[in-house]
Length: 251
DNA sequence: TAAGCGTGGGC
DNA sequence: TGCCCAAGCTT
Image 1 (cartoon, rainbow, N blue to C red):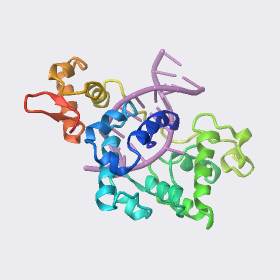
Image 2: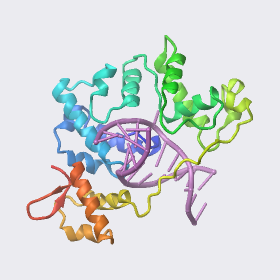
Image 3: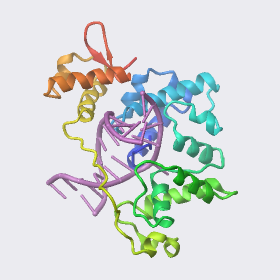
Image 4: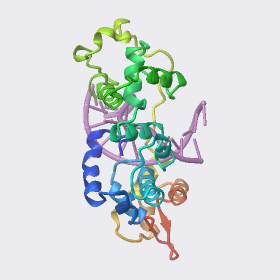
């Protein structure tokens, strides 16, 4: 849930989920569509699908227990480098480098004297994160750097005056030079397939049952784009077409 | 490797 | 007010 989503927005949904589905087995017992519905407006609803698939895989392959091994975690749906490391470290005390957007920014500034990390995670960043990882207390180190990035060394207006490592921060010592190079490409949203998909899926989530196509047609004017987006949702497994031509969340 | 994938809050 | 960005993953 936290992938690309602020903690504050995740929290209420997470509480709902943990009450309703306290274990992977409980979630796996429901249709994937229920996960998509309970996802609400968190965004990137494919994550709901993958979380459901992950719960199913854990139930079938790991007897309902969340694996503690990094490689085993990595093999699960929706679990990438970061999430595997976070679970192995925070939940099981394993020694793994945590490289999320916060940590990458802290390292870029404190070590490399740059305002922002590169667009894609580089091998150099991984090497650095590994090199800085303490032998003992790696989980505490990981969460500490994450929190530093999330609360102090923020993207927009870093609170250097209350930063515990301001004295050794290469970026601050260099006078906080502005990000050099091309501006990061903004993620335009209005008018995109993404927005269209969001509109369509919102209709399916709100309805507790099959929806006639006409109910989807009214939320997006451009028919060509609308059909493309709807096909995409079906292809992704986020929606289903029933025999009578109505649409619903997946069973 | 780069593009595609939602949504809402902060500045 | 728009624009930026948020505990990334998959193809």
